[in-house]
Image (cartoon, rainbow over all chains, first blue to last red; front, side, top):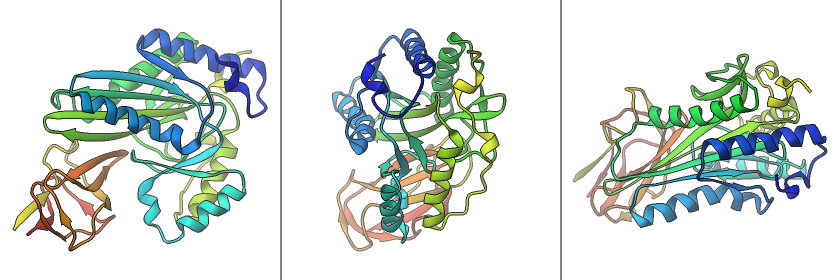
Length: 240
Length: 76
């Protein structure tokens, strides 16, 4: 694990060791994986997924890229929310509160990035749309659950009603959400580019993440019905 | 007039999606192959491409529900 990954936040060494073990397990499971654990520009770190997708698509050859990365503390929300009348005011208020808002092009609703949250992105370029959306999700979740199993954490997948950005393809431990996924697809001729990415809460305080998301969404006029007990971190399920 | 249709294979199951955003305004001239809108189904965003060049007429506003095969705009 690159020591710079520990530059921000107050996390103990056991928790960072857990993050490092997960990164190693992911690299062992997906041999083409590229860890990028330096903290850079918030929006740039998110945009890099889409830059990689566009670059790979230009080559017009089947390709697979796995990126493992972290980001500084921010809220990451779909760019469709830019159209909401209160967006600018809400984003400004959140930035003042220490949660700058950045935009992503995949679906879903607001999530958080921060030290302790590990992001995994799978980019695939296919000559034709041989796999459907569900197959891409299943392949990706297999990678994540297998890596978690390598560090002795048994994960399931499915919905977690009450969790923020809920969906069918969450990563769960004992029914509580530890990771969410979202997807972006682009067609270019017969070729199809698919980005599916996940943010896994390795350590930290999911309830604090939820409080920030709830505050942001309330300012946007979105009434989420959330329950912090449906959220968890991988660290909560490791016997120290 | 050329219809802009949500492709029948844009997502896997027969469920509703929504136009996340139109990337051009009504009355804009768009070129064939340009990405004119983003469509979201569940947590998947996909791009809607102009099938031809022309002046865009929007039939379904952003955030309104759509189904695969539905005509959402026209190009003249």
